[in-house]
Length: 305
Image (tube, rainbow, N blue to C red; front, top):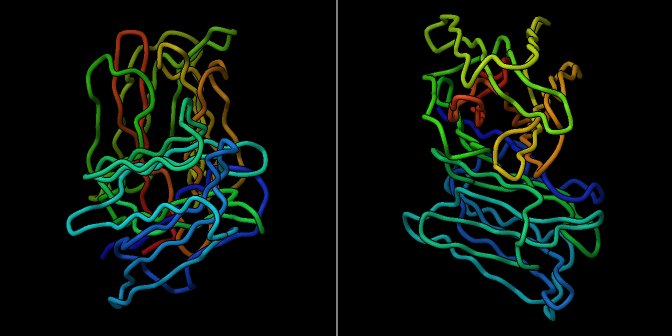
């Protein structure tokens, strides 16, 4: 049986937490309504949506922020067979300025034009079924997503980086055990190679890689504490779209990195603790002669059924 896990949120630091009702298990999105002020270069003022829960009921959430009828209102109806699989946007220090929502049938852009994204969350084998986030009285400040996950069938998030090299992937990851990164840490450094060990659905421990090359300095860490898992990854990609830095954080508040050179466009996969907590359980991407481009598998945290 699939359960939902939360990924995000992304945006500005302020606002009060907004979420779905406790005990609710979203199944699919029905509609989304967004209030914005395009004339001011954004921002996103208000946000609400409707989803179907595990009992088949239509649950209305929001509005979060300011749903002034004088604002520009964007109504998105999720039609039969349609699903949302990508969310990206921009933000400043106080609010989300723009959102781009991509379904398998349409693309919706709201707020300021997206010349350069602050965050990008592409999903390649999954759909968004609900949202959470933060808002104040005037703005939507941050937005995160809920996605359904089954043990051994995690969600692909990403990848980030170049389109060169060859695809690399794994099967049925359940738990991440260790990570090794090969990088140069100079001002123009980047991630050259990557390997890791994970446990699959049969309980076998499988070592993968190295993807890319073993050029540069070798950094290895183990998830050795009881119940420890990676619940946040941040990184950057440079102008050539290759991954230039990676940093890993665990639920035990241990940080590893940043490895490489922290430059270029940022990306992040935060997995907050709570009722719907997930974990990084493995990786996929592309492997070249002198680089690796990375995506993340998000699965169930070790304490989930």
